Amino acid sequence: MIALPILLPLLFGILSLFAWQSVRWQKTLSLAGATAQLGAALWLLVTVQQNGIQHLPVGSWPAPFGIVLAVDLLSAIMVAVAAVVALVVAAYSQVAIDPPRVQFGYYPLFFFLLMGVNGAFITGDLFNLYVWFEVMLMSSFVMLALGGERPQIEGAIKYVILNLLSSTLFLSAVGLLYNLGGTLNMADLALRLPRLESSGQVTLVAMLFLVAFGIKSAIFPLFFWLPASYHTPPVTITALFSGLLTKVGVYALFRVFTLLFVQDTAYTHIIILVIAGFTMVTGVFGAAAQTDLRRLLSFHIVSQIGYLLMGLGLFSQPALAAGIYFMVHVILAKTSLFLVAGIVEKMDGSFNLKELGGIYSARFGVALLFLLPALSLAGLPPLSGFFAKLALIVAGFELQQYPIVAAGLAVSLMTLYSMTKIWNEAFWKEPHDPAHRPAHKPISAWLWVPTAALVLLSLLAGILAEPLLNLANQAAAQLVDPSIYIQAVLGAMP
Image (cartoon, rainbow, N blue to C red; front, side, top):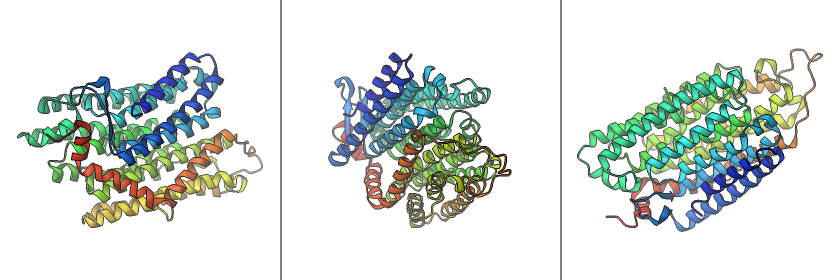
């Protein structure tokens, strides 16, 4: 069961390769594989919640000597949300991805990307975390460049250069940490690092990990590659990336800065908190200056990463719980907005806000699909974004971290401004020349049904805020007490 999130995408990726010549079979396999993945992920989540942290020593080699897969509540939640996004995007791709891209390997890459994402979520050692990051990087790079259009190639080059730099730093940090601790098993490292006399070196390695994962997460000032590349591929691929890739980097930060690097939190986590504030502000101001819908939403990916870092930087159980709940909220909301952007482009043939208009009067349903996740992203009640931000703000007040609280509130207002800008330009205003404007094209059910399903899930995340926050609080309780993870993986506390 623990290995299914890796094995299922691998299996369906291979089957998609065998069906290379048949677009229809690849599309069918994508839906079957994503559905199976969601079932396995939900089963794993229920099992972990009921029975505690699960682990699998691969090849029966006991930890810390062999490869270990370890699934705590945070891992299980991330695997489940990734499966939801994968199923929605697989359904959306049925008509959104053109046959040439399918024939050039879109669906095998889709599954191998999902395999890398899930592997990163459930691995129990740092070297294999690096391996899964590379699986993700290879798949995502090819998906970004798929089609070979000039803007795509330019965006893909920027993307891969910065992520290769991140991988180099990551591998260097792994080597230095192995030299210090003599192991790469995360549970074993959590035992050994506090006993080391060279605490300064551990803090230095922690900063290397912060930079490496920070590039992958698109935090300040390392985020510039994201808005320069995410707007170049088809919006389906951008939606998949926005929901999963940067969140894997944030997950890695949550993992190492709650399990490994907790000896000097007055230094490391304050730096994270400062970075969180700058990430929020720069992302939202970048979004406010955009007129291309995809670039605007890409800058908001950066801005929302700041809120996730805020939960980690505050480093209390309520703050971590709020960060985990915010992660679920922002994955659902941001993916929904990109899918709506794809529908808008299919209808009107443009992502430029200046060229759009009249969608509210012509297609009220599409306008509603945008409005709900947009208001949620801005933090308006009773949507999930409101409860997520409220929980973070309350945690900040409890710790008397007033600057980051002020930044979070101000950025929320600026986010509302950006969403209002999109609404006014694309949905509310009348077209410049209604007489010569082409009629809105019909929208396939393969586009609006999965988008509506994801918007509904985002809405339910607000309605069911209390049980979801309780689940996030259980996950946070495991993070603030590393001994739970150590005992589950190693069997006992030496």
